[in-house]
Image (cartoon, rainbow, N blue to C red):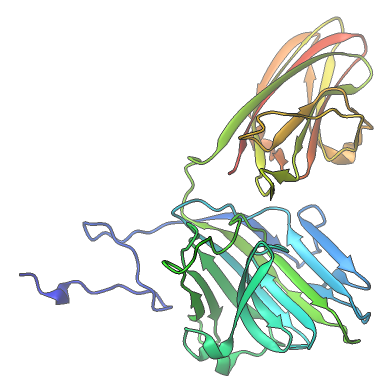
Amino acid sequence: MVSQGVFKLRRDNANRTSFHTVWGDQIVVERTADVEEQFQYNVNTKTLTTTTVGNGAASQENSMMKISTGTTTTGSVAVESVSVIRYRPGFEAYALFTAIWDNGGVADSIQHIGPFTTNDGYFVGYTGTEFVVGMKFDGTIVTQDQTKWSGDKYFESHFDPTKLNIFRISYGWLGAAPITFEYSGDDGLWHIMHQMVHANTLAKPTTSNPQLPICIRATKTDGATDIVMHTASWGGGINGTDSGAGDRYFTKAAAATVSTEAVILNLQSVETFQSKTNRVVSKLVKASMSSDGTKNVKIKIYAGLVISGASWTDIDATNSTIQFDTSGTVTPDDDNLIMEYDLAKVDSIVDAVGDISANLPPNTTMTITGTSASNNDVSFTVRWRELF
């Protein structure tokens, strides 16, 4: 009989056991980042969405993002990453971030940060004057204050809300995997604040959609305090290398006769898919185009142009978040230009457009146009993958 002493558990610096194969090899993975934000230069308006009420505002200060509610009674501000942490079954997702709560806890307010939206996700921060960890499912919020945390007491004795602190929230989802809230102390180690353990306790998942942005939010319902938070950097993704097994691939072709710049194809990623808020990012992977006529042709790909008179059709209403249109019109604007291609009178190009980061986040559009000095026949075919 083998002595049980042979089977010693290997633990990390947060006292967590590591995974090993049946042969005893330790499983080691790389992080795959989906969200990366830093604020030493500015608050990036292309990768972040800011929502304010009253005098709420977001700005850059001391190499950090500063959010403030203003002094109005119902002031609020939320800044959310456009990109989301893409959940993959069987992988652990993580969000790393720093935060300062300049006012500490304030009655009749919330001050949260983490991978969450208005309705879903996980967070740390103040609810009123209590520092809590929490989760959301379709707008229902469950919080746990410090008196009931399951971790060690390091946070309680070392945390200063007015100083920049480092946090990590990790979750495996699968519907009921644990959610771990951690704090990096001044001893250089990670300390578990609390773990929400749900296996064999829930009749529904911990959150209704595990594809989550990173968000910072301050909201108040009373008082004249200007509630201020700061954050220096965010990172989010999965622990492991994604094989793309969950991707869904689709293709659309369109053709037109062009002279002055005109639409060949419009694409849009819908705001709602299968009755849920769409958080699926689509990425172009390949484009082919051809011209046939008497003059050269220029083809351009734009993001986010205003499209008028469109008639949208689902690519696949059951399985795809993308719709297409060929009748809508646009006003071209090179500020929105992603890429352009020059074709000879009779020519063709195949391009791996994945190299130019031609992405369609939820509730955004992409437009492909053609221009020629004479009426030229052009065709354009695009293939993309949807990151479910």
